[in-house]
Length: 418
Image 1 (cartoon, one colour):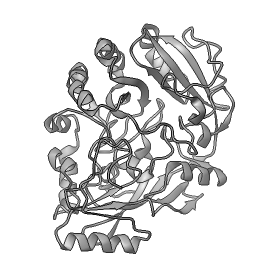
Image 2 (cartoon, rainbow, N blue to C red):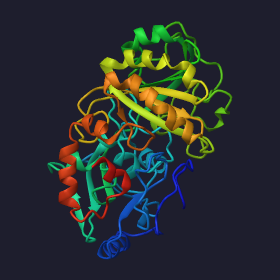
Image 3 (cartoon, rainbow, N blue to C red):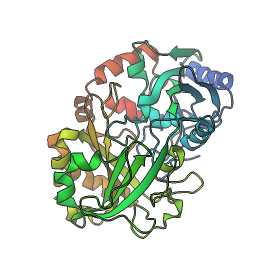
Image 4 (tube, one colour):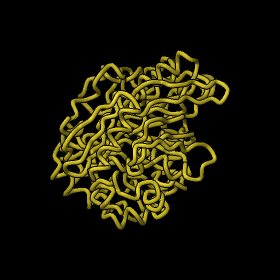
């Protein structure tokens, strides 16, 4: 394991561990700390930023060997899992138990701890991002001891989205609910102006709605409508004048839809419909880069129009852009902290230098809306701007100092932000 999924980050680790027990992990962390080496954990390596990297010569800990469901509590309606479990495997286990999570990532291939640590993925007006399901976490601290941060602990809102900077998360307890079915329908060529004018109506049309565009035509090329069966009604025959697709589609034009979840209005379990992609397939080769920015929902229409003004500059770089809604939450480092949010996601061609050269232009267009960047994706925003747009940053910095006074879990990414 030399780098991340996309190949744009090469890890600086002197050694990579893959523990298969908590005791083994505790020993690894304590040993590294005693000799002054930094430690950082990694999961599915799907981050495009260096958030999961470690200081050069430090110890990188892969959590993929700790991937079990530990307990399902039907009374408390929670599930406790090890950090390295992937959402696809967890969803399958919960479905067998008649349970569900409130939300899933587009890619069920990513690990729970990695997604939570970076506040990844929200989809739906009333759905928080994946981190909002957390009810408790267990951390390994620098001396190898375990600390449990559970319900009622004032540290929990600061410890959930943690960038790997507080310790190594080994267990998480997540809220669950009874299983439910979802039907997914795609619509083609929703007019851009009509969609922006009716943005609230469009994003609130179902349990989860995603808009896809490359900003090269005056349309949202695809709208993915995911409705809860028996709650959201049937998919409308037309959506802002657009008709349903008659065949399965991949979000990126010209790519086979074989890896995508069922789209043609056929109802199925939440686990098989909420993700965009199926666990048994690689959704793409990894030959891409990604950025994502989060603006207040009230600024969403204006932000979309500002991005469209850059269509000519976007053309040689963009593969597709997804627009999603995320409910507000109170997690300190969440990108939806304190405000209902519109997420503007960009999948780029795999040309790191050209993408990074373009990002300041995009970020300037989004500056009036105080756009917050995704912790695990590419941004050119200076640390001072990111701190200004993260209201609870100083509180998180204090919590980090309390839990990790020796700086064992600092890496260049977090140190630069601090």
